[in-house]
Image 1 (cartoon, rainbow, N blue to C red):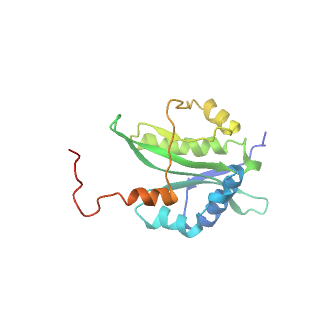
Image 2: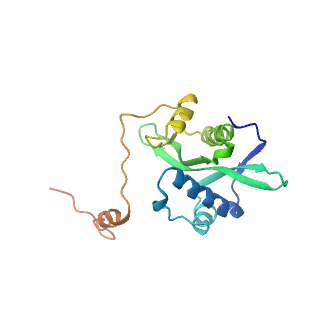
Image 3: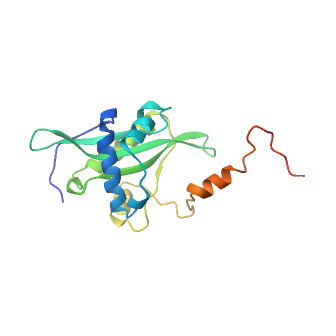
Length: 179
């Protein structure tokens, strides 16, 4: 168990993008997915602060021995919508706390901060995905009252299959209805 360490949870600032990018890369290594990382500090800056604001991030910050503030965790999330509920929701894309700071309440504080935003915005739910082998994360989420959606399977399409599918879109012309 990690000893208590004072920390602050706050919205990310543009200057935090290099630190968030470094944490994303640490997360990718932990999840054995580093070969998939294409993000960069500039991409984060663009999507978090310079575009339509469809993604948000909060960070966990500590003060180290040299009295320097340092980011040791983050949560990145975005809005969703449930047609069945007729209500917005939030999707937690990533939550990560560096290993030396786990067990100090930082992960729970990050997740609670995202949950508070969902409640403030009138969202009906907060959702996320967990790798099936990540037992520490699964235990953490279950202890907070989260339940797995075993009857649902997430699908993904990206890269070349995504481009091929996009080629079928009736861009600039009315789609033909089947007879």
